[in-house]
Length: 98
Image (tube, rainbow, N blue to C red; front, side, top):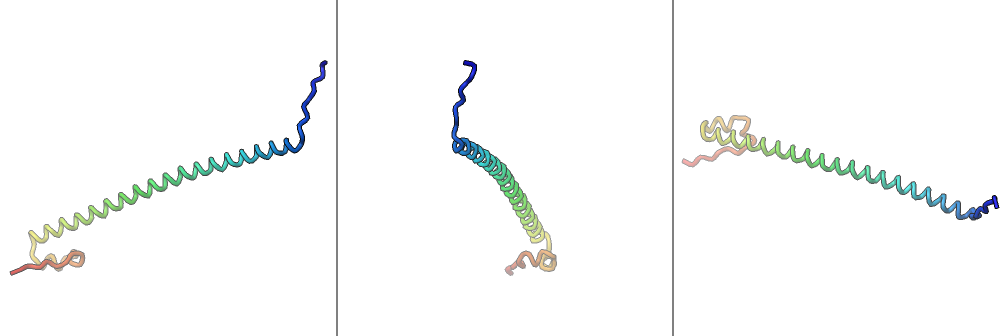
């Protein structure tokens, strides 16, 4: 009565269970790596979009500043000043009708 009977499990089932556990562990590690990669990729995409917005805003501000300078020169300066300034190559020469 003191002896307990152990159930005998075939070796093939033990190997199968061990293999399944290894596969589950490998799949879990793959999913964790994919999740980390996805998070990093999302951060990269967000930072690129933010950088693009900053560059675009700087470009627009620069262009608006040039337009304001040109407008000021047209109103307050002579034609020769506009044509001979360094903005002459950037903007077309004004056409004055007589």
